[in-house]
Length: 60
Image 1 (cartoon, rainbow, N blue to C red):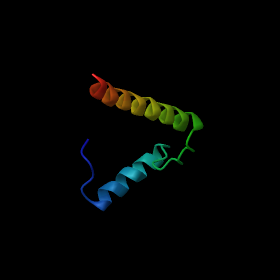
Image 2 (cartoon, helix red, strand yellow):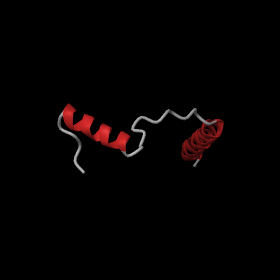
Image 3 (cartoon, rainbow, N blue to C red):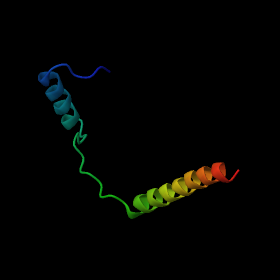
Image 4 (tube, rainbow, N blue to C red):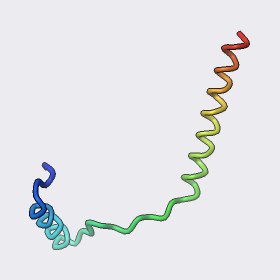
């Protein structure tokens, strides 16, 4: 399916979605604490990995 080229085409697609019972603009989900915690730990592990690789190059 190609993206709409005009506003009228986009409005027609939105009206078809509403008629079919599909909400084209669902409410945003609140951010999960698990996602933030996981991302934080992942970044910590990556930083420790980079620092250890950098230090290993200077020691070796």
